[in-house]
Image 1 (cartoon, each protein chain N blue to C red):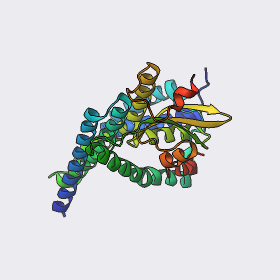
Image 2 (spheres, rainbow over the protein chains, first blue to last red):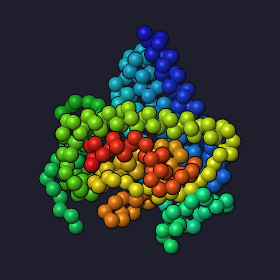
Image 3 (cartoon, rainbow over the protein chains, first blue to last red):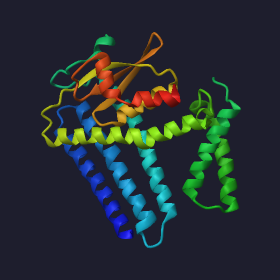
Image 4 (spheres, one colour):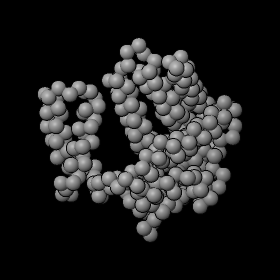
Length: 117
Length: 172
């Protein structure tokens, strides 16, 4: 049983690391500011969820003595990142747009630009 | 300045104290008392910024469990779908990127519901809420979308998916 849980926790951590890697590749490859922010969301969602869930299972079931304190802190860390990161993303995206940053290639549709004129 | 309601203070106190208990993770009397004093002070000063509507909105069990179901099952499902899409897009060399800012309407009325939907949209990779405007009592979201294929209500369906229907069940 503990072997199975160890495999589950390792797989979750690997999945989280994979999505974090995808997010970083996306940040490097995407053409403009806003698209880069989109790619970075991968890191702060499945990246964080995968790693924290894997760590949680490890702390509760795989470690030789279950670490309740560590488990609780992992949950709090995961929740805090999930609650705060979208707020930061709104603020950065809106700030970048207001500061006049636009992609080199014009966007398909720009309803915000049209309505704020 | 908005007045501080007693129910708002109690709700904020409960959240602060729960956080304190989780972070200290001990039941020594001095920890419990210090936590209560600090949480109460924090709640007295900050409750009016946090809670604008009914404080115990989620005390209704039906609403609470619908919310729990949304955050534990429906939303992670959408999250995984969007993450896989984004991974395909990035590993495929970002060729199909067609960014655009689309305006989508929403039926939600309460502030909490609107904030929850905006955060859900932002958390799914591929869409970021940039602005919420209110027109004729209806919230309009301006969303930066990485595959802007459609406009108006159709784009709204594609972006919000099942999320709005579920949020409406517990936050109007």
